[in-house]
Image (cartoon, one colour):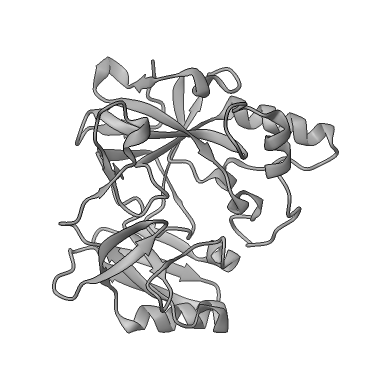
Length: 276
């Protein structure tokens, strides 16, 4: 098996960035989910509520995060740590400390997306804050993460996507691309659904090791085109994943595995790395 894709999503629910390499941290790939959008209640907002977020491009420059949209000039946000003002924001059942970005960002979002973006604020995860991963699937270990849905890494395989797309084709439906699943690490060379049986993945010469902790239950974001925000078939691929029943003991549709870093803090992970 080897790594075919690495993706990072600096702003939760905006477009991702394909990388050739990244640095590994206990909280995820460098810069992954360091920012997210919140509403006036300080609760997280994603493509589940606002599919148009998929139309905002993201890039990482040397010193800045850049947001891009066809309706607006690019907006740059300094990567340097924020200081001072903090607020408490919520993501699922967790309450986290975060720094709000400037009102300029909020105005830019309204210019890009229209009135549906009114009241949104971009917040940055406070570096001194720790958001623990649920302990149930960690076998006594501890881990923490930033603004992911709950785990530092998401691992998927090309073989499982191919199996899903064969099932979709059998129903006369178009295939879905891997970006619908917003994975950090995409693996090729495995058998379909083999990731569900793996406990760990180790990099070359054991430089890093990931623990595959929990099957990833999927949501309506998988139905959203990750470039246009269109929803071609509102029930797919979720309905087909349910029919495939890859996790017979769990409720819901599942694809990929949530993961934590067991060894290799600060190591570099690369596309092409052989995994065992």
